[in-house]
Length: 193
Length: 247
View 1 (cartoon, one colour):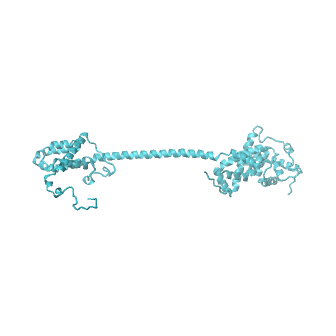
View 2 (spheres, helix red, strand yellow):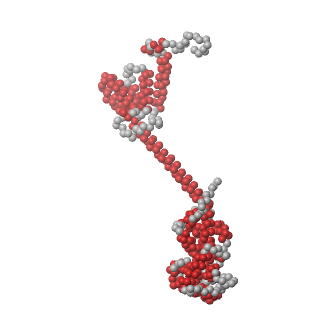
View 3 (cartoon, one colour):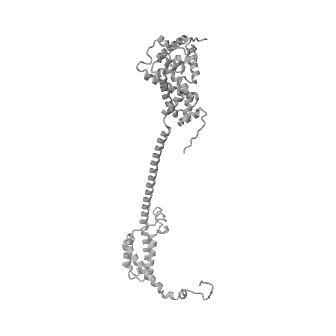
């Protein structure tokens, strides 16, 4: 009869170590810790909830597979590593789905911001509402904005990841900012200095 | 609103929401789905264990084969060594015995000095072909008067043969290298013997046995005077004790 010894998964390092041994309890702990954040991360790139779940599924499968070779140094490094995997999965998904129409096709800014609706019935813009404003941006704008403004990638890195030039990345970012500003104004948000 | 301010607004908002559960995301249901997609650990372990078993069996077979091969090689080397030792050591008992016989035969040889070179030639032949030794010896010295009786000579001959079967000590062979005669006390040494020699030996043994029996029955004249022969074979105590059943 087999006896399973449960070690306390107190630290993140121990969780990673147990995940490297394919311990299902440790995998669950890691999933519980990062599932929400990674879902939101994937959701910023992929609009559809079903597609987001697909991206997250592939991302977690890659994480649990690649964690065997991962060398733990700090919690932040682990988080960045996992985010990068999920972002890459999301970009791959975007490339696959937007192959026909093109990720960076010209989009009318007025048309893009017209569909934006207030997050709540009262028109209050809270955090969830601001987050959802990003989803109203066209795919190209949104991708470059998220990569640069939220994830901290440089234009050179974005150009490499999306196979575009730096100037294209910069122009897409400026257009994304302009669209977001319009959306914020449209939803009654004014930034006070 | 400046660009950096807008970026900062959305970044802080994303950080704030990072740990908040999304509205359209069922975490537990997603985990159940993810669990089914995860590769089974037991399957991998079974595969790994199977490979370990295969590797262990191959290693074991290799070890057994290696040990068997080494043992067979050792046995072959021992056989070769023993064969060499037999080849080197087998002439020595004959030469030693012939030397002793030469010593015995010297007075006769001195009487007939003309036969000496022939004897030497005969001796050299004897050392080369030990199987013919007895025949030539007997042919050369048929009428030699000996102080021993025939049965004693046969017994002496048997003792010599038995001593010849065993490897002689190295004191008699100072010139031999150490490798030539390895000391293996457990294993018996075998010698190739012609069947005629065995038959002859058996006949001699049979003769010796019959004569020994004859001698036991009728001791020689010198032994008749020995005081032990006059003693009765069975002595019965004269004291009689009616209670004891022992004699």
